[in-house]
Length: 509
Image (cartoon, rainbow, N blue to C red; front, top):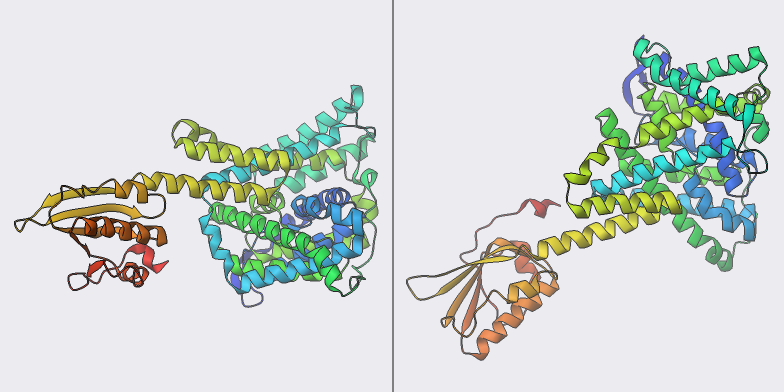
């Protein structure tokens, strides 16, 4: 039954059954991940669970992307692990609060729009690397407490239960979509293990999740400049990693659902969530692509599923820990392996022979950095920088000039392509200064002066023509180009009168 849910000035159609069941599935899947990420950060399990509750609840209510799930993440855990080891958990809480402040500031300044600068090969690489991380993290379940691989009956039992989970998740939607396949798989495997009294690892074997409501606790750190020096580098990286992962996840969910989220609103929500997480004994976090895909693949499209997931996670912690601790890890492992398979952009493999080599190189490099170093921010940053360099190199070769001499003996150079730092050398080679007539017109109707390097190139050309007693006129400059050369050398003669008042599409950006 479909109704309308009005929540905090947001109205959309909601299928309550789907939202609630999907939220329950996500809540169960959040538990082992939150515990595992807390261990990675060197913190107690409840620190990760409290962060998952607070991040999920706040971003579900205030975020810019309904259906997206946030919580404690590995990307944040690997950043704060050294801070936790050297200065303790109180400094972690302080860094998380400061990271939240930075994220709110980024959202208020509308910096989320810069995500449009991330090209598709980088997004593909990020997603593929994340899928590999999710898959590799599940391999630990196939090891015993000493780190050795399981053998014999224990291995066969685990593999069988994992395969059963994967089979249900894959096959059930082909038969019916009345209930989420992920939740059904967890319940079926739980039932099989309970009825047959099978000896297999459960959530409780990893750590106890029993606790109360997240306690309010201001970070017990000295309010000094020295403290700020300690926590600021970690806070800045957490804020950056959190925004990158959250906004990329938002873009991925946008593509799947064919809707559009609001990046700046999500940035503010992530910041508020991290601030509250830090003062409610949480380790902080960001959007979780794996859990978000579980939620979306289960049919959830509204805020209710995220709210249910967060609230039920807290209920499990406070009242149902003994039951949840009996859930077989095999079921959750199978679920996360299916998530990794669904996360991987298999279509990207077909681009190897069809796309430019530079794009393929970018995608592979970002995938490797993400998967090997587990540093999502570094992977995206390297990808964006290299993409910009490839773009600059490609456009540097596109500068062209059509040459002609009119009836008055004036030589015209009609320029094509952008004139910027990368193309100034090729631009200078287009002119035959010694053999040109006394008057030359450089027409920029199909070109564009982009930066100071371009202006300096124009000055050098005019000076070279002046030395041999010849005059240069610049023609058809757009208003922004005129502004750029306002302080240029007086020898540059701009024919303003003949310039039409036109704009290029990029002017609006």
